Amino acid sequence: MPLLYGEGDKAFVRLQQEIMKDSDDHSLFAWMDPTAQDTAYSGLLARSPGLFVSTGDFIPLINGGSNAAYSMTNKGLSLQLLFKENEWSTKLHDGKEFSVVLDCCKRSLINKRAIIYLKCLSAECKQYTRIKSNIIELTDSALDDKYLAHTVNVRQKPAVPTLQVPPPPWWSSD
Image 1 (cartoon, rainbow, N blue to C red):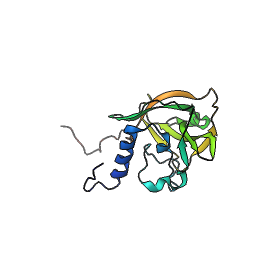
Image 2 (cartoon, rainbow, N blue to C red):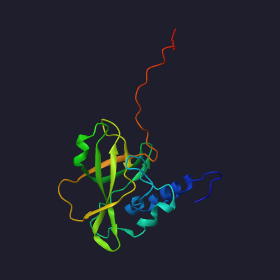
Image 3 (cartoon, helix red, strand yellow):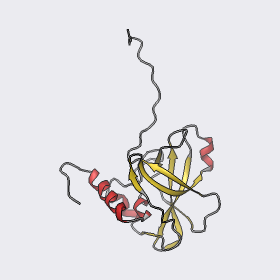
Image 4 (tube, rainbow, N blue to C red):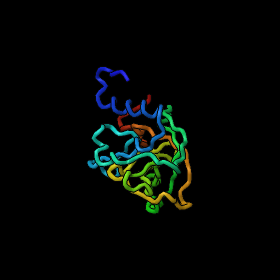
């Protein structure tokens, strides 16, 4: 992969995109940002190698993974994941939140799979963002029937919905 002058932090994201072209390893998405707030939005790809410090022992599932293809599209990273709507999500007014199961586990706990969190940013759920990137939870490999396969598009830099602000009183279209 050639280096691009002035690329900065984008170089690590581009490296992960290159890895995705040859791999279906979900441990690429198993990173944590201990400084992030629960409500901070992010993509599925880490901004820097340092975000893998506490999750470097995640490995792809040997058996039982979906092996579904994923790719970077004009709508973001498109992939199929197992989703379950979180109970606290129904009380929210600004978008549903989901527990999402990755096809990876800890090297020392091969019967546990990684869970991250995504939030729907539109009524039609056409855009998702990662939230709570400061934690990764683990769940049993034998998942209950509340988890459903769903294909999503997650932008690396999500477009956050904004309120329509009326023009200032001095603005005139005449």
